[in-house]
Amino acid sequence: MTLGGLYTEIEGEIGHIDGTTKGNTTIQIICDGALKESFSLAWDSGIQRCKIDVTNVNTLKIVVPNNNGQPDTYYGFGDVKIR
Image 1 (cartoon, rainbow, N blue to C red):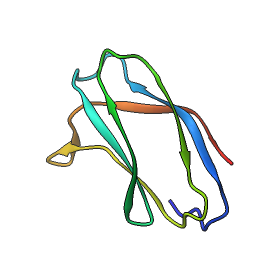
Image 2 (image 1 turned 135 degrees about the vertical axis):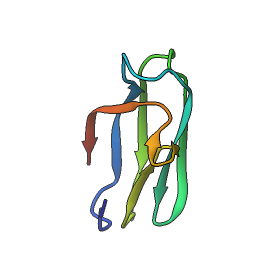
Image 3 (image 1 turned 90 degrees about the vertical axis):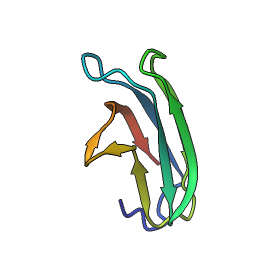
Image 4 (image 1 turned 30 degrees about the vertical axis):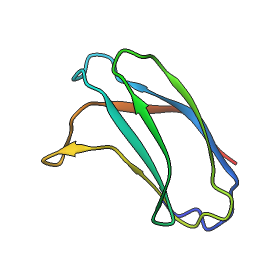
């Protein structure tokens, strides 16, 4: 995602999607090619709030580990605000 340095913060929720494969994962937030944040998530831990500083960030990438092109586990994002 191209942010172009126009934003300062992304805030939202991350959680396991009910009824999908049970498994734990770590979601990585990559800003301008460097690891900015990582969130370790367990399938049974409930929703986590997250806030990420994206001041002066040009490109944002969210990385979820996968297996042969398919996610090992399924997680979703909600109530996301980019400011």
